[in-house]
Image (cartoon, rainbow, N blue to C red; front, side, top):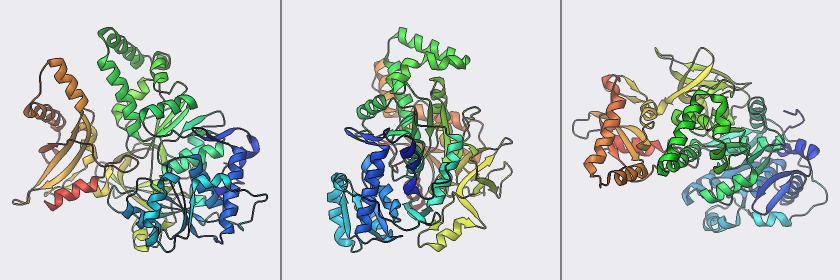
Length: 548
């Protein structure tokens, strides 16, 4: 990465110099070249400094993914202020928590969210400035005002972690934290000015912020924003962009694979036979995968796809294999908000589907207190590791020790340096005999079943006996159940449905030691509640079981 980039407000400067008239950002009819993007960012920077704001003041940005969101963020950091991205799905209580604890002096907000800000601003006396995103185009300037020298090691952004555990802390990331992570990404994810991307993950999330927003701007890559995440809008945008690099959460890739499988299931016998033949050939002759599945990829809006990156949650082996079979090169990565976020990426030339890859350049890792299988807590260090949690020294000291960041994730390295994640330290179920059960290990086995869409394995404590059971909470593949019923010409009873899932659990239990076996299961009528990156909020269900 160009060493001239000292802070995030300069991230687009190489592209402005080399490709000033090339498309940078586009959403529907709103498009910006790199030169126009810089002008808009400088205009906003001057406006913010004109409000009397000083270096280190906090300023929030709030709205759906859009070029204006990008301009808001970049204008804030170029002015030497600290960006406080706000999740557009936040409840009123969460908004108040972030804006209050983030000490936001103002907010740049999408027009369709102005009412939400109006509803809470009375409780936020520190929030002095509200700037609608539609006003950004009216800002004009002739000369860029100086914000003074910005320290690369100063705080650039406060990211409030999302709630899979029920807690929310403000992660302090410096300019250098994120820039160093982009440097590392540049060595393992190769994109340039000829590539196009579609932004799907919310931009307030660190994975999208670094990899799907700042990194492509540095590389001169065009980013398109769909009007919404409805399948029709997403597909149309992907086709318009002729997307060559796609960064998304595993759930999106699961939906792609599911859509293809549904088409095959509903197709006639001839098409089914053709698909199965092509799949068989592709599984044996890997070099034929791309031409054999060209039509499938084109229908998915991935006709020009060169590389796909999954992150933000675990990608199942089932989905990874299906994507590879369809000729979609898939990289799986691993990281956390606290690490800016990328820690590891699986190399395209030698992927291991069950692994999250090899540590990126500049990152060191170790396994703390490994058990007999080499599984322990993953600790890392590098220039991408956060400064700490904002105004929370106790929480900072719990995870930052002697220069190492303790991730709270459990895993191991194989002999070639590939990292494997086995679960969360806080998710471990400890039996009454002291045995450790990693629920993610059981969930990975269960979700391979075509009958299961989502699953959580949690402990349940009997209120009378106080004995603990291992319970699988299952959200079925209802569409497949309906197809099965229609093909058989029957209406399945509740007991018949349960029998299917009992058999799936029995198959998973086979070969497991007694203490690991799933002893009960429950069927859910709806999907699990999730964070904006589609991680299931596990803590809601673990707490439910403990309190029974």
